[in-house]
Image 1 (cartoon, rainbow, N blue to C red):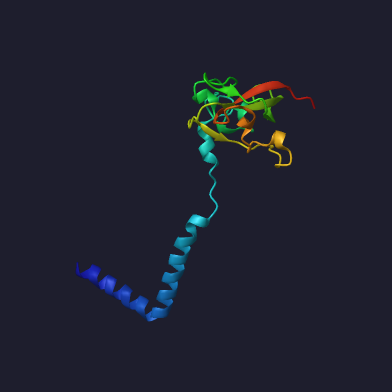
Image 2: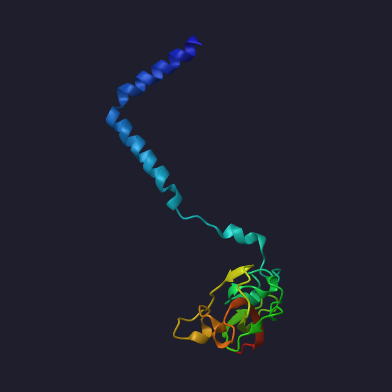
Length: 169
């Protein structure tokens, strides 16, 4: 034990001869500043997507290819399907549109997004994807409006995606 005490005493005295209190405080300040700034460094969070492959994602997943421009609760989680409203709701006659690429066949499809109205919000499977969304001056391609405003009961419940056709190049 005596040799360990001697070693620690020798290294402490050596450190004290080479440094001052000010330099110790400066080093400690740099260390604390660096530790505080560590969460601000960029982090690659792409690994989160590894668990869900867009080809295998089903209609209950926000990653489903037909939902590339959807904003709202998925009707497939609220008693309906990806393309039909749940019972007790009615599709809004006005919609927004998007063009989504099907990873299965590599083709682009024109998709109409319809809000289902008549009940309070579903609250399940919220999905907000804004791929190729246009600014508000193009309302037919913007998903931030309450499209239930054309219905007698303007309560929003969920959203569906209906394929209108294949996009031509």
